[in-house]
Length: 196
Figure 1 (cartoon, rainbow, N blue to C red):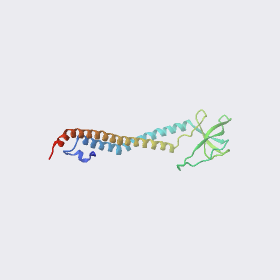
Figure 2: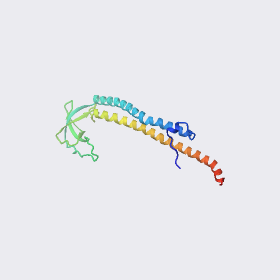
Figure 3: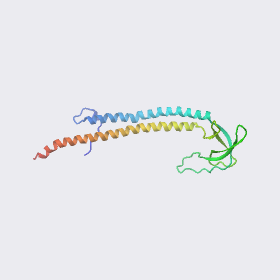
Figure 4: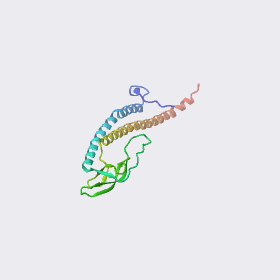
């Protein structure tokens, strides 16, 4: 036996309409609106907020870090394309040296792009104490953060609506089947006792 799925008819007057059909139909409508309209709006608002935070984070990094030109003392590993085909610029820790503000030579490990060889010049980022750090966020990093935040909130909100719909449907189906069984237990014996 299959259960009846509520439809637009569940919202109209119908002698076979059950209260659970009306509840499920309204819930499906509201959760559908949540998944289709509210989820993208929530994602857009979240992305907008994340964009502002990411821009502030990038500004703070740019203010706290400064670049120096350093010379590689050893070769960086060669670039190996990723199996996924995604092109990126991997960096590897390589020993480099540069002249500090006081005029003394400083040697340290710094992230350098693949393929650089000994003697090449590379940009190294230093924090306020003069320690090697990563490059500050670029505009691409800000947008990646923005889009990731917006997508995650959209997907989570839509997913929550779909899961809620499925859970509600399961609960109401169990209640409908239990009511049907109770009714059958009440009426079934009368049908069995009737003989032509």
